[in-house]
Length: 464
Image 1 (cartoon, rainbow, N blue to C red):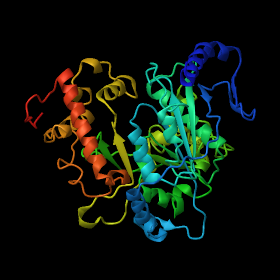
Image 2 (image 1 turned 90 degrees about the vertical axis):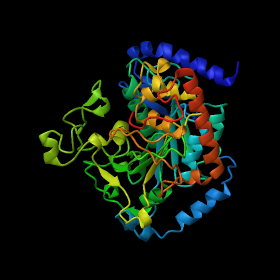
Image 3 (image 1 turned 45 degrees about the horizontal axis):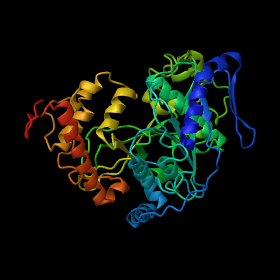
Image 4 (image 1 turned 180 degrees about the vertical axis):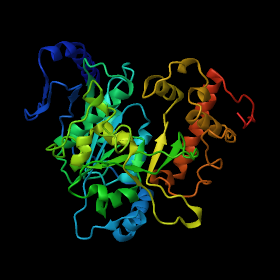
């Protein structure tokens, strides 16, 4: 039996006994390395098993093509960089440290490479959480545990020579969280890791999915610019910065005209476990009162959706992992370019590499078991599973025109070169763009042979 299999067996045993154990005594995990309690909470909904080894980054070598991009972007003066986002430069002050956090699961390892290529050398800490179950509590194989290709990749130095990378395993206990509640509880584990890794109140937390990444230029701005949400003395009313995000649907050639709004940034002063809770109220939350998103009356319905005494006092709750993602009804600062775009170019502050899976089985498995699951996936045509994202993908792979339905998502029909504006550093590799799109075309072809297509002929009616 391999080490990875033994670890999975141990995890299964822990899952079996944890509900009984949690009734008898509050849950506590002790770090094997120094005896420090990792979790100590009667209301804790997770068992967090930490990566015990403090590994130094491997001998990762930066691609010369990417290094050219770093040199070009990084040489921009800080004053110019801050101005383009509507900020002023904090001259003479130290750079803010960036703490990144995300869950990892079944996305392609290329997604990890795309993300890392954009931010190389900028993150201080990378906190990743992997679960051995999906959002619908079905078992899955760990892909980033010790002894796996994923584990070797994240510890290779891919995020930079100074980045400290931590992978924690999430186990579900007796609370029975499902779907998005399950995800939000995992995000809380990211905050615990940031605290353990030494996050301070003047550090910046970046909460994301692994397929979402801030542009290198905006991350550099976040380190040095005078951003109102990052100034000391925050009341934490609207602490979140959300982004103007360009979406690529499964391929660099499938550039969506639908704009996304993650990742999200919050200053440490306003994050649970990092900022001071003194004088701040504790909000009621939607899942069992203490987990997940905030309940109605605590910011979920707008910036003024708070008890009267909270508004009067002017001091608001700290943000948990769910708040960092949802933004408490999505209010906060929208980070975008303020400059006029030359020649009609579009400039963004983040990218979303959506549905970059390695095969059709992984793609369909996502829609069956994750986030917002769809029970009919095994028998449905791909375009019918998600009539926006997946229909856009099918049309792109088949070189079909956009739907004429005004409510449907559209793409740049000419592909990567048709879109003029900010583009990910990883996509500067023309060979990758060509190979990936060919892979996607083959994936869609195979899927339609098995499950059928809404566009069986070589030409499709664009009015559908």
